Image (cartoon, rainbow, N blue to C red; front, side, top):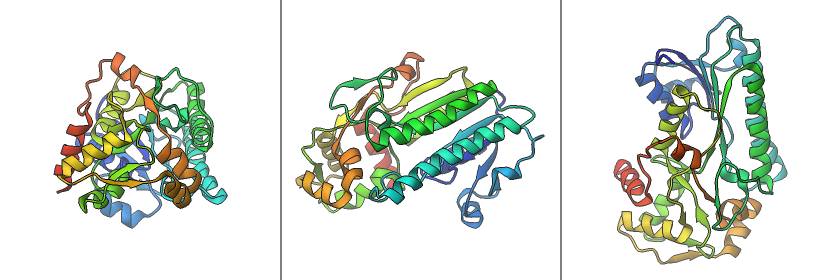
Length: 305
């Protein structure tokens, strides 16, 4: 696919979406981003991309080569009240449904829909390795991912390639999980959460962007686990992060405190682990920029400073 094609991105100003949008612009793609706050989005992304507030602004005669779907309210931003769960569902399912409806009315269908999901699909698995063939788990995170993926998969009926990316915990500068942890660890107050044995399947943000680039170009489809080959325990992650910052790692956040503070969200996202393996990416020969956590953290901290 020519790199001067047209890409439509939802969630294009977020933690992954903003650097992805800028990356694709630098690679010569024409980029359109669906936004809510036009002025803020223009400030974040500059003059190059086209910004739209509604998919209705796209004409049926317009040519879109690739759709990238990253929209969704932050899953770890608040406790999971009933109202919050509905926001998390609606922000993913409705946007994805809207993209498929847009593709249906376009005179020339996009070649591919790349749609984000998450390893929350698998539920809690302890330290048992899970590849893309593993069955789904239970709980709200699984249900959220399942419904999100089902909406995206409907684009297959239009003759489009659909790539569903089950993202691990994305690590990068300026936000995400590290955005919350770095201030604490820089003060020397970092440490494990719960018993520290829960497995963390993570991915460097640069690798996420490279994987999306691969999906745009290669004849691939279906579900892909987007996690680094090296999963680690929470205790190991905390130790490596503290070492990268040259700080101690002696504090401990007990499970009871996490449950009191964050409720169901804390239980599923912070205290339960998943050892997710990127089998399909490895089989395709994808070379991870950051396969090991220590190097990934060193790079991110160097950029942050």
